[in-house]
Length: 171
Image 1: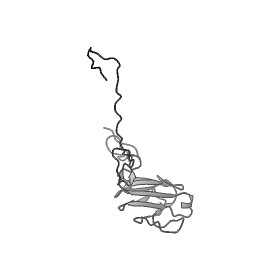
Image 2: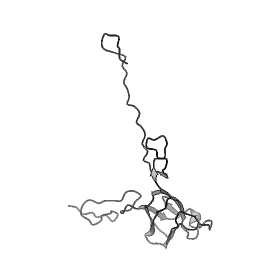
Image 3: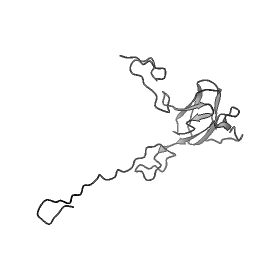
Image 4: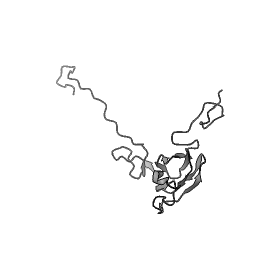
């Protein structure tokens, strides 16, 4: 058998083919937000209640501040407060969100938020939010791209030619 030899794989050094995390997630199934040169990416993320977000540092010295806005000095008034300490480590930290609602956060290092290093989270129930879909969920907090729509009727073939000699002709 083969051995996985890829530092970016979830099973590096293990027997078998390399396995990778799904886009936007880490190997443990946590959501990943990248922090870097004046950005959080994705800057706006929707997650389920109980999900964990890991902030990965792409470079620089940053924190994740969900307490008081670095721009206004006023509290964010998030459903639950969170703060990850300033670091230049590869991972800033993680937080598990157990209360539904809308969250705002920024990097409170001087000047970073004013240069665009701000983020938002929607925590709640995912579902289809398009009321024309067959699986519309009026209680959904965010659209999870699960919408399904009724299929149009198959193309019907109409023929002008009918067989038989009676007056009962085909449609």
